[in-house]
Image 1 (tube, rainbow, N blue to C red):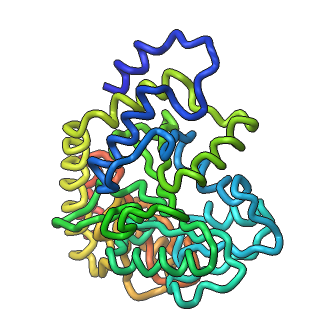
Image 2 (cartoon, one colour):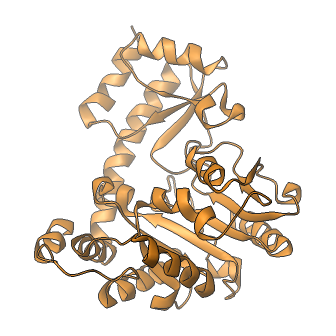
Length: 321
């Protein structure tokens, strides 16, 4: 259906709306209400972005974060959170504990489900995080791009969930991407929602910077957000691969930590991650070092579930050699 939307809107020579077409605005608002339990939303509280990474990297700058400010990032995190803060010249604190978030913090990043750990934050944690952000006068931004990939009946709440916000979204924004749920990584099709004042502030800056999602991509984004069936089909593919990869890892002596959701397994052999990488490479298996995501990941590796089915099935044999 993404291809249908893309084809139908392919002849789009005019400038598209930075805020998204009226159809896309309504579809995005409806998606957040339907899939993320936000309660009623309007088109003024949502906008498209050029992939979620663009927003992660530029949000500190778009919010006016500067050298005298602090940006909080997860202790184990994808590097772009830190890169965006560095670009703004801000001080970075890596902490998962709201009580440890310091004065002077202007932006707090959450990532649930987490990359690389697959860890999911529950309602209570999200409430505490939002409350602390408001105490500090900081914006809290939750990167939720793996939200549709919860495993074993794992609930994946949003920071915008009504149980968290109680209907008050002030100070909070959430990011989502169709790269995972709809296999649209190359389309760079994502969306942002939350506090209307923050969304409009970001939108105003993006208009002047030319950060506009192309018209055909907006049509494709609207098409996939309006259809839940293909998301379930895609999730089932990953569920099967996850079972194959998880079983092979555990038979080979790995322990799987967290990994309640997402496209990865957070695995360890109780040794330095570089030793684990070498062990896997000798068997023709590529994994990512946990240390790439922070010091706390030094004994883990990230194992992706994005390989074709035949490679997932071959993993057990490779590990047995």
